[in-house]
Image 1: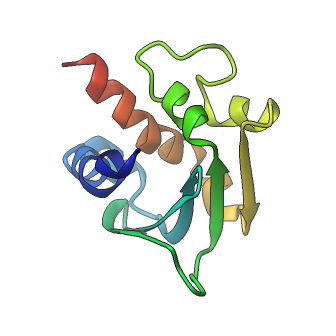
Image 2: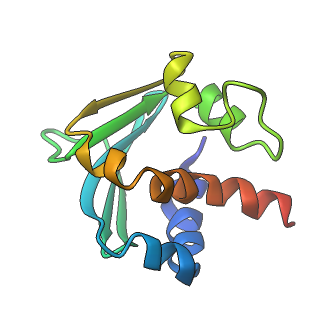
Image 3: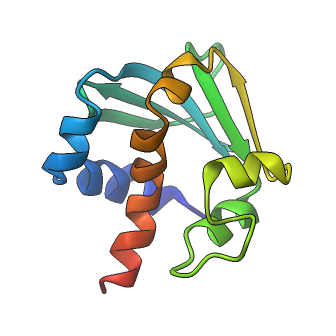
Length: 127
């Protein structure tokens, strides 16, 4: 359901946003992004998304994972998301989003990751 967003649009939206790339210039990580049953490995190097691969994966190597239902990500990416879906930490608080693994990269660059995922929402509202 979110294949187009993750496989084509996300990297383009992030990599064209020089301010966002600059903010993430110290981010080098691979993380698992799960929407429903679909898994994606997202590789970030110096703030740029260098690859997005769709699973399933036999033994994926990732630093941390973000897992939520497809409906939860759809709600998050709405132009005006409902309370509880407006922010990654709100989604964690209300148990819509589960984060696991080594959370140091995401917590130390939290605003960067929030803006990376919200870039899809901003692109939708500017249409």
